Image (cartoon, rainbow, N blue to C red; front, side, top):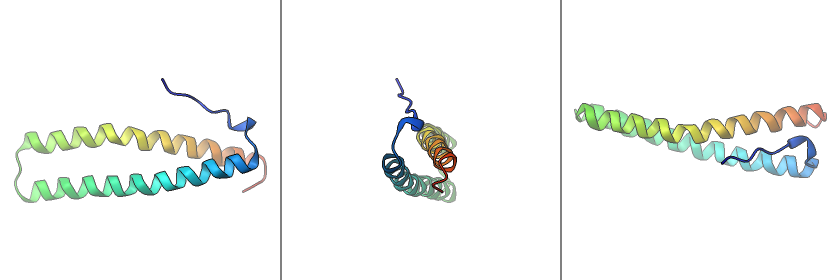
Length: 87
């Protein structure tokens, strides 16, 4: 069960802290995505079986959903900060 945060009820300091946390998570997801792309490229270059490559792609898709959720939260925080004329 996912919890949704009402960013309009948070203080400016809490919003800025949440934005900083999500920015750190974005960097982590960039490394994860880069690592998976590297692994898939390596598997293709070593002529790995199609089953192994498809397994990697499916795993990558499953992990990618977490990054999408972070992006949605980041956009919500950014829009709330813009509405308060902070950024």
